[in-house]
Amino acid sequence: MSLGKENNGTCERSIYVNNPHLDYMKDDILYHFNLATSSHDLPAMFGDVKFVCVGGSPWRMKSFTEYIAKELGLEDPNAEYPNICAGTDRFAMYKIGPVLSVSHGMGIPSISIMLHELIKLLYHAHCTEVTVVRIGTSGGIGLKPGTVVVTKQSLDSMFQPRFEQHILGKPVVRSTELDGELTEELLQCSKELAEFETVIGNTMCTLDFYEGQARLDGAFCSYTEEDKQSYLAEAYAAGVRNIEMESSVFAAMCKLSDLRAAVVCVTLLDRQKGDQLTSSHDVLNNYHQRPQTLVGHYIKKKLNAFKKC
Image 1 (cartoon, rainbow, N blue to C red):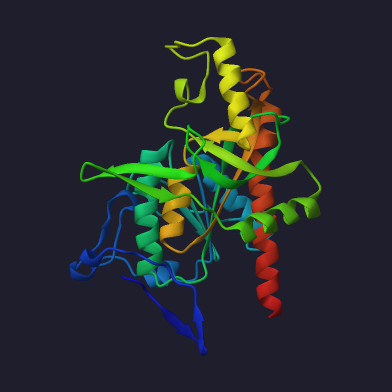
Image 2: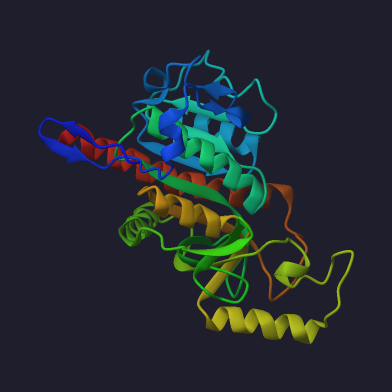
């Protein structure tokens, strides 16, 4: 099932879903958003959305909303930017103009749940020409802390560009290809900002923060420092420049939905030099702001281009 929309004689890029069962549902309840097709006018609420930014922390996504509102000149001194999903404690969602900001929690299972409902939300709202960007933090490999990585391709822990999950007890493998043109546009935006280093590189997506990422500081560890360094060296040779826990399923699901998508994460440390964060709060706070600064510049640039058309 797909939704196509004609606008002034031109076909716009629409949200694609592949679930025939949705056609027979009188009401689609987006449980973890506390939204539903029968009780909310989703096209009126979200039909103008063109950019969706997702990140792990509810606080960080509210902060991004406040930031982008100021960047786009939509800031209201009295605005409180209410959480649209206030009726649930799973995710937080904020909207300002054509920009939707949504938290996704930590790890593949959490972001997968959010994406299923987000994609259906955009579909039911009849959104078109939507760009989705994950902004977040990561551990770097061979990079100076504070470097922003725009993901070329998400790799699994064996350095393969794939996302594998089990459906009805059988393994299903999906592509983790991201939008190459969008990746280059984001790199160009960083050059225009000239505020921090940004690189394009592969991102390794793991199922765990500790052993899955070759850390030595978890509750359990069955390998040596030499084993860790050897593994990280293999990752670097495979083009991996940072490690996080959401990019593979994000890339796979956005590709299935025909959504332009990118992953933009700042590195908080070089994992070849340590496992724990030692930078000050102020330094880390500066790092945290870099992905939103880059993506905010991109959104502002694109909207200004739309106005000129």
